[in-house]
Amino acid sequence: MYAVIDIETTGLRTSWHDRIVEVAVVHVNETGQITDEWCSLVNPDRDLGPQLIHGISAAEARRAPRFEQLAGQLAGLLRGRVLAAHNLPFDASFLLAEYQRIGIQVPVDAANGLCTMRLASHFLPSAGRSLHDCCRVAGLPSHQAHSALHDARAAAQLLGHYLTAAGNPPPWEAAMAAAVRLPWPPMATEQVVPVHRQVTGHREQHFLARLVDRLPRLHELQGDAYLDMLDRALLDRYISTTEADALVATAEAFGFARADVEHLHRAYLAGLAQVAVEDGVVTVSERHDLDQVAGLLGLRRTDVDKALKTATLGSVPRQGHRTDMWRLQPGDLVVFTGAMQPPRWEWEEEAKASGLQVGDNVTKKTRLLVAADPDTMSGKAKKARQYGIPIVHPTAYKQLLTNLAAPTSVP
Image (tube, rainbow, N blue to C red; front, top):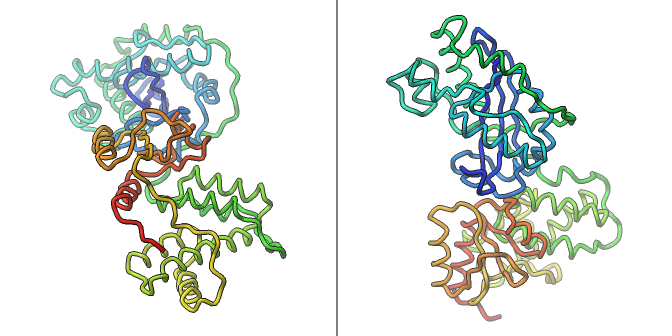
């Protein structure tokens, strides 16, 4: 009977090339009861915009299906039903734009549906415009805002409240009859599994778990390419989902088994330990850094203890692969991407004041890309990955900026 929808987007205007990043549909029958629901994240193939609002990470979105993969399935959920939403003109405009982008014209129009926000002026005259306030005045439970599924459920419950108040038949009976006759074009339906938001506190498996678990090679590993990628990934002491995927792909390309990679990780940690003991003192900060790297590499504190002991005794040859050499230098070109706090222009002004150059776009001359979300799918990030330019979180960039101001020790 009714298809109540809600979407989360990268911004507010389709004319600015903003895209849907999450869509939910909740079915409601003629008595106002919820009968079914469906939801999926959507890969927008661009940056995610105000992530502080919708709370979707690029790591989640990049593994979600694209809209064209979901288009047929979504159409099947909407076909023959009255479309409803809280602020229907907004949701309808984005749905229409997404279908138009893939060359399909669908009968999605705010004039053909129900807007629970507009109807509130009749059924809830004392309520404000927001879904939260309308639900509060209607005596409905609070919900998690800016989550497509939770917002769609709340709007569906609000519609049920209206249906109870309106009686039978409701004043929009004609719209119900017209919805059945709307000419939806035939569309192929791909068998795509919807991707949902991660549960709060969920931790993805370590990327080592994706590698083949077999005995290591007997000959010496040629791991420079892998270690070089590890250098870039650990620059900000954080391994993003994109970087983890790249590390797994590199290991598999060289035929490394899990044990091979663990061997390389221990060698990498040994190199860091050698640097830490060079001056004869391992500071609290250095120990914390070693523990942090060990955790990212799937190693334990005991592995750090062993690496430090070995380095202190000098019982192994000095590692040729140094891992502490990447530094920002005065005059380096940096680029920023994503919605940042404080605003991006403040970051750019600080960079200039520190002697760095700031670019609007990523080129081969760019030294570093600072991203609000290191997994971002923005055009700048795509170019940075193509050119092998490190991508770091603003927090790590601040530390690099501190190191830029600090004097470099002379060996």
